[in-house]
Amino acid sequence: MGALTVRLPDDKHQRLKALAKTRGAPLNRLIDEMTTLMLAEFDAETRFRLRAQNGNGKTQRGLELLEMLDAHFAGSKGESAG
Image (cartoon, rainbow, N blue to C red; front, side, top):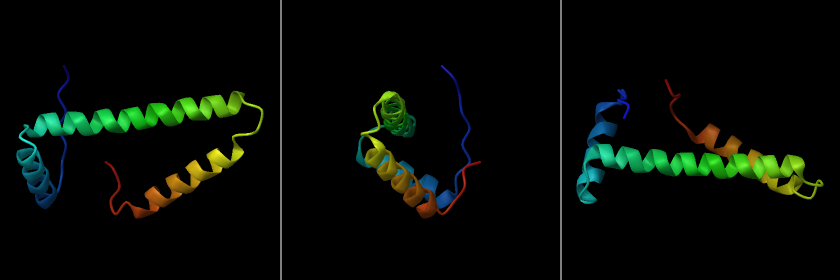
């Protein structure tokens, strides 16, 4: 198992600790669950894009929607990852 150090603003750290407490889980488990969800989403999008590339062009609208979502979420992030 790997170890990871993450630097977060104090207020975000406290909110995550509170969230973990309300779920009755340690903060490590909460972070593990969040990363599992993010990786599942990434894998699903990757599979979709691969199938779209191998498809017959009927998935163009779906790809356009994904691009719109990517742009929306990229614009709504107030911080950059580091």
